[in-house]
Image 1: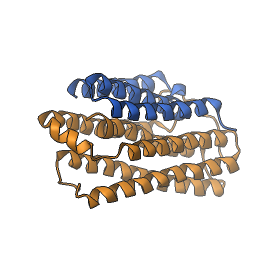
Image 2 (image 1 turned 135 degrees about the vertical axis):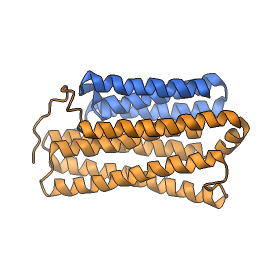
Image 3 (image 1 turned 90 degrees about the vertical axis):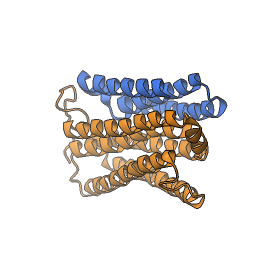
Length: 191
Length: 80
């Protein structure tokens, strides 16, 4: 396996690669604009936004944040172990990373089921339109991230993984953390 | 072996997450909202600089991400 060190101080080689960072910035800007539009919309009907946001379970949101952050920690550790050429440990931490993502999706499924059972579906009101679209798109990112990690794990097992690929996969996974760290306070905490 | 720095970062991130959830339950004042946004911004930077190893990247990427965060938190903080 190729674990050759990359000079990340070069502007063209940030950790994960320049293309991945362009994607990360585009994603952050897209979600950021949507959240700003949500904040602006809340000024038109603050009572509705406050009432609707009280229907969200902050505990679920906080636990899901911990799942994603812990998963991100394991991802960083997997990359560290890969650089140390301990591929067995790297593979182990990659599995833990995926477990964190799966737990996030499981809790999100429970949360979605409860919202649907209570009738807070897409179209219920403006707040819940934002809630479903923003968290739904984020969930899609997490699923895509899990698929990427699954392929990465297979490459590790076959001894064909490259450091660039491991770092790019990690950058995508951490991007899911970053997006969630913007969504969680705005949707669950501040209205 | 795990990097100690990353373990401390994870501990800080979990503490900050619990803090923001607690603050949200205690107050609905503007200052509480700004505090939640500020602490969330710190979490964002901890993930980017430590877990994503942005601290090892060229300063352009560091400034770009910090710039994005300042604009985002600034606009949401003013609007809310």
